[in-house]
Each structure stands twice: as C-alpha cells, then as structure tokens.
Image (cartoon, rainbow, N blue to C red; front, side):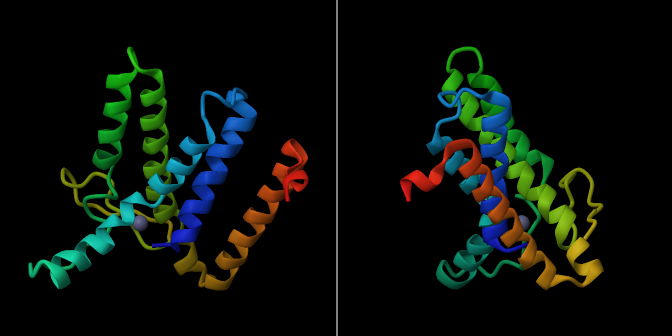
Length: 168
Ligand SMILES: [Zn+2]
C-alpha cells in the first residue's frame, strides 16, 4: 500500500476541493463527512490489521491476504448500494455513503496507480492490474515529496478560499 497518510490526505483533499468548487453548499457535505471520507480512504487496508488479528490474537492460521476482498469493485459497490437505498428518504445518509464509496474507490485507484497491482473484479475474475508508477519509476523519495507538495498546495488553497491563517 502507499502509506496510510497518502490515502487519508489525498482523499480528504479531493473531497474538500470537490466540496468547495462543485457542491458549493457546505451544509451538504459537513466537515465531519469529509473526515469520515478520509477514514473511508484508508478502509480497504483494514485487511492488514485483520490478518494480524486473526493470526496472532485469535489463533486462526489463515494464509496471508492483502488487497483481495477489500480492493475490489464489489467492496465499493456495497457502499454505493447503501447510498442508493437511502437516496429517496434520507439524503444525508445517502450523501455520507456516497462519500464512503468515493473514499474506498479512491483508495483502490491510488493503489492501482502508485504501487503494485489490484484485482478489481475479484471474486469473478482474478486478473490484476496496476500502473505501479512508484515501483516502475523507482521513485519512493519522489512520492514522499509528492505528498508534501499536495499538502502545501492544499494549505495554499485553503488560505486563498477560507483565509485559514485567521484561525491559527
Ligand atoms: Zn490498499
């Protein structure tokens, strides 16, 4: 996985920029939804502590799994389905699950783009895909630099649109 901080940071920034420039109505996506979106951006990697828990704590001797069940379209579709079920009678819950769908999908996209491969059609089809930019370009340092650049750009964006320095 790219580092956890990349997943959380990039997801929060993507949702926040979308909220500022496309939705434009902050009540529709309150700040706690953005925060939950950031957690959803990390959610697919729950398989890492889950494996650890099963093996080291609960005494199951399961073979190693990572990027299998939680890095698929099927996993993202679960949250999309919940969002659609809520759509007609609870807009807030629908929006929240829509954001979670985005966070999970964005995680899978970043894994596909940056490191290794994912098998998005599992369990129907096993083929794995990945641009693996970090591995292919051999640029671990550059990617750490990238997250710093994205963070700085976002702080600049927040200052320009919300004058956050007034609150510091
Ligand atoms: Zn992952």
